[in-house]
Image (cartoon, rainbow, N blue to C red; front, side):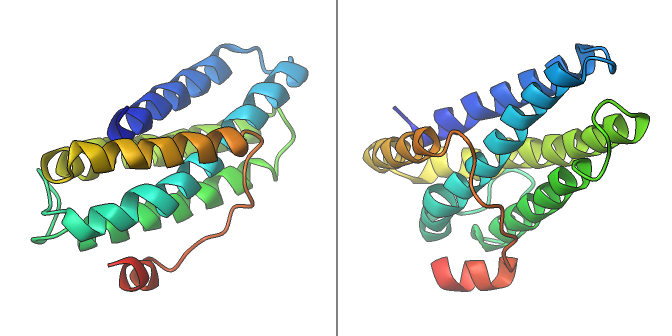
Amino acid sequence: MDITQLILDDHAEQRRLFAILEQIDSADTAALTAVWGRLSAFLDAHAEAEERFFYPELLKVGEAANDAEGDDAGPETVDAIEDHNSLRDAVKAVEKHGVGTPAWVAAVGRANVVNSKHMGEEERQGLTDFRRTAPVETRHALAVKFAAFTADHITGVRPVNKDPEAYVERHG
């Protein structure tokens, strides 16, 4: 088991849930509510698990992969935490609209854009960086923690934005 694969698997599930939402008739508010409830809780729990387990370790070993800036994982981690904050805000914005309304559908679309941008960067940068620099044993140990945390928080976590610079300072 490898934390980078668990994160990739979660990304695939996030993409699948957004695609499901796109295919549900806007009048079927019960189905939209159920799927969005699952997706929004999943997004929050996933981001929190990454922040607890993945990014602190990436900061220790990362060397900036692909299009990441800098010589270490600091800048890519700051960007990731900023992305998580933007996603939390986008998810919260969905709740301001009636389920199935054009405004709600547009807000879900904006959350999808924010999430897709983040996942693409993370897959090119942080995950690549970690596969190149972290020992398999570390990736396995973190995968166990990540899987247990996300299973224990299947209904979500309390979403709290974080200061990206303070996060890197605390964990770097």
